[in-house]
Image (cartoon, rainbow, N blue to C red; front, top):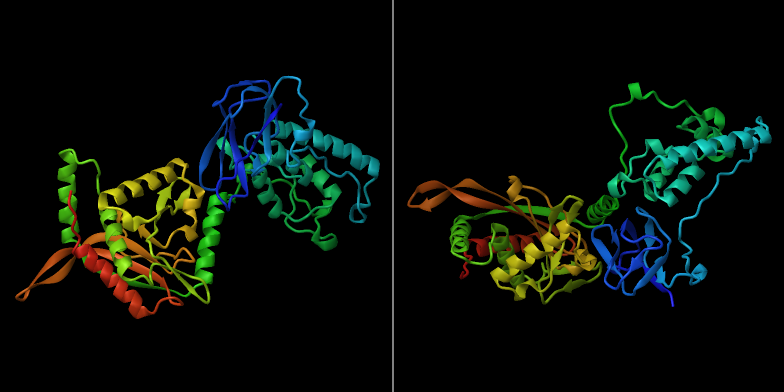
Length: 446
């Protein structure tokens, strides 16, 4: 009996995945455990292994296609088996553009339109075949008269995928059928439309721009991940009352511990505990003393956490990710350092569990820009969390050393952004001061 391979659902919020690379094609032999295909969500990448042996009877999608989760991707079975009933309804299909005229373009004879349309479709198909483009993107480009040559692909290896065409379509006015044909034939575009409901007629089209006089800018579509980050940051600032307090902590103790760690590592200690690990350890201790900060604001109520689920902002090639270390308050400094390194590495590799990237999974977040030399910044809260701590660079500041003696002492900058709906300024300030105290009094055994 034929075995269907579906697109797995990775995380509760994932609705579709992009097929990045097919490792088996129609007619290939498959053994249990063979790599079938690679795919990615908006923030992580995965590989699908064969659970059955046989022959690949059909592959319903191509590299770069965006596939709804739980859709049939391919079928494995015995050669000759019927698989007609297993084709997914979401599989890409080829469409053709309408070739009839409308009242807005009635000055052109239907026969001429048909002949011109056939020629245009042929030219467009030739252009499309020379590009790296997925079948679904190709069909949509043909239908909407989008010039593929002008698109920049966001798929694997720069391949044009469906969302690239959708972005281009959204930026253009709707066109009459004749205008679409002329656009395919000549490559002309329309900035505005004078037809019914703002539709662009053939007379509204302008000749394609001479690339020798091209502008010094380009419109580049956002990646799925960038769109999600933008949406989350805008929603955070739009839907909460955010305020940031800045304070610094004497970092001499922190730097002494860092020197001790380096020496211990040279002598065989297994974990390189960084300054960021130490700050996170101090934050956890402070959160246990201020449970109202280790919380989610729910509008008319507050969820207080008995455990600390600490999230850490991680910069990756694909964008900012914020993975969480669950039950971080149960870990030693060494265990915390290992867990923070593990989730950061998984983010950079693209193999992080999507559920660990949810803002709801964390009770508090730390964002460290100190390594970039940033001395002060305003981090944005990951709602529904009530606060986020920004960690800044260590810089020398004057301090009273006693007996009227002043000197420059290294200080670690700390920036706490909190939701004023959930916390008062006094509470936030006391918590921030407690973090500083924990940093200054930090102690652990190697």
